[in-house]
Amino acid sequence: MARSRSHLQQLAHYLRPYQRQVALGIGSLMLVNGFGVFLPWYIKLVIDDLSQNLASLQAQRIVLYALTVLVVSSLMMGIRIASRVWMFGVGRQVEFHLKQAIFEHLLTLQPSYFAQQTIGDILTRITSDVENIRRLLGFALLNLANTIFAYGTTLPAMFWINPRLSTLALSVFPVMLVLVKLTSARLQQQQLRVQQRLAELSDLIQEDINGITLIKVYGQEHHEQAEFRRQNQQLLQANLRLALTRNLLFPSLVALVSLSLLVLLAVGGPQIASGVLTIGDFSALTLYIERLVFPTALLGFTITAYQRGQVSLERIDALLAVEPTIQDAPTALPLLPESVRGQIEARGLTFSFADAKTPALDQLQFRIEPGQMVAIVGPIGAGKSTLANAIPHLLEIQPGQLFLDGRDITQIQLGSLRQAIAYVPQESFLFSATVRDNIRYGKPEAEDWEVELAAKAAHIHPEILNFPKGYDTLVGERGITLSGGQRQRVALARALLVDAPILILDDSLSSVDNQTAQSILYTLRHATAQKTVIFIAHRLTAVVDADQILVMEGGRIVQRGSHAELLADTEGLYASLWAKQKLEEVLV
Ligand SMILES: Nc1ncnc2c1ncn2[C@@H]1O[C@H](COP(=O)(O)OP(=O)(O)OP(=O)(O)O)[C@@H](O)[C@H]1O
Image (cartoon, rainbow, N blue to C red; front, top):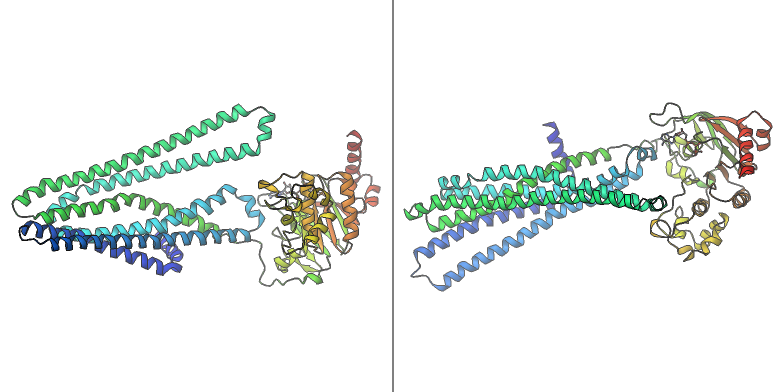
């Protein structure tokens, strides 16, 4: 009971902003049903009048009757359309606002949330689940109200005319209801199966398009073709089964209604003959029976839409209830961009990923002075990227462990902290937009000359000029494909453009040739003398000029110092990494 109450509360919550529209929609449904019950009654009176006074009937009266029927029917049509526009409009409005709310909520969540979810699940919530709620608030609510009004108005009228005959004629309806209920459960399952098959097929197409080179290199076109045929066949089967059930249901309903009419005829006929029932009564009962067919047939679908909508309501509420684990503390204060010096200090910085056995950052102690260029090196999985993510507070950092200019970063408002840091993550992600818009992503108002300056500093300007439309060339899924090195340098230009006092590069030059990487680092060193630069590198030749090198292993800083100091410790990890790379260079 508590559950259903909370569902009703949820529904009320979503409908509250549209009270007026809902009231208008339901009011017009009441009106239309009022007319709906009046019309057969009026026809009954007309028929009785016609059959009793046929001889003396004037043409004018017949025209008046016909006009009344025409006007009432037209009014009903107009009001019914209006009710649908209002009610379906509510569903669409809620759909729009829910999508907006979910997307905005997703943007507030920390990156680790997305690492724990599949993209498919998030997409399903923002598409199918929202759609189910739209159907619940539009289609289901409209039909539920309509069914209640249809039965509520029609049954009294029928029983007023002839209770016994009405009961007999309606005795077929429970069978109809059972049939609809059984079929709608089946239809729902079959519909779900079609959606699953369709999703699988879409996944296959997406994967094959992404892996097209691999398919060709390994000559697996036939294998993929066969797999596609198999899944396409399954989709066809699922669609055929769905169509069969649908095509069985509606003719069966029509047959049952005919049975109802047959009962009416069989029992009502003799009653007309004996004068208990007028022809008008008989006609009205026939029309009333037909009036109930549509709402009854839709009842099963309405219940299904209601149930599915409820499940979706829960799924969406659960998503919206996820609290961001990284957000401004109530006591957090903003940073003034011009006052940031760029000193970064870790005091026992420790961080563990959920379910990890060992911490990814283990009691780190370091201090990076303003304007220093600091390199972080170490074997794969050492914790370098985790440290890079900790500085802009992209991870759930404990208070008292990480400081910017002596201020605890958990006490700095996130927006202003991130404004002070330009970060190039390991994966250089580019949006499906022009090169220019990609570079000025962090500063959309940047002038063209600023974009070009940043591109020059990232040593990508000449290559951009060679693209088909220069800076206006589309990149990403809808545009040209850039090489790994080009992507990295566009991403670097993006970070350089925002001109933040702290620059973090996470292995951002790994796909750039050695000479270009050296030139970029040289430019960075001289053009960004005031900036604190932290760069993670696998290629040790890139770090020799760094003011300080932190060597990480297993989440700890195991060595620190300048290149010369670290090399002097011949037993240390740095010296062994250096020797290994030198050997690799010789071998290559
Ligand atoms: N989202 C995550 N969830 C769980 N564990 C993670 C996650 N990201 C990284 N790790 C783990 O944390 C440890 C440190 O990873 P990190 O990416 O910081 O290493 P790295 O030094 O940057 O490695 P690489 O040189 O390969 O980039 C690794 O053991 C890694 O498997």
